[in-house]
Image: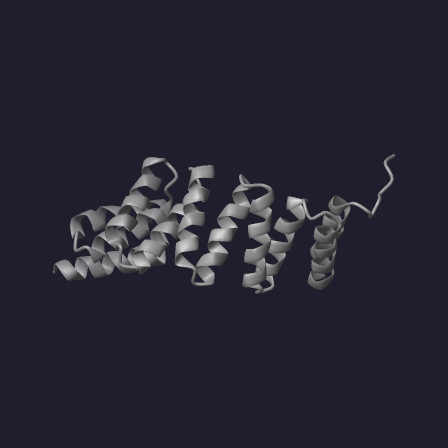
Length: 193
């Protein structure tokens, strides 16, 4: 059979993944770092490093690892989405917006990318933009209970109560125990009375 050779980046990624499965985060991180040094053109090594560093709470380092992954493999869907998520956590709203837009471009059915992008607009009180993104997600048949709940919340913020109620009820029909949708619906109905 083929000889297992620890001199390739891929073998160090495999070693890091094995260490991670045994709960050895620092050993996994060392193996992933070694893979990136051995072959700075090996995108999976940077991606694995980013996933691990995010899990370890090293968000800035994870963001940099995803940036390097995307420099090597611009169409890496998970790296693009995760990059947006790290930028959002780091407070880089403009960078996160660009990353989530690119994520949607690469994977038009990834509801979480739309929900995160819409959330950026919602938090910035750009309600029309948030509503447009949530509706686009639903129009692409990518919407889930969270998308409908988010759309309902944005519509409620614009005082479009009737439309909000429709979306919040849709969220609850998709996920009957959706806390946020129930909360928003109760408040929307209370606002009307």
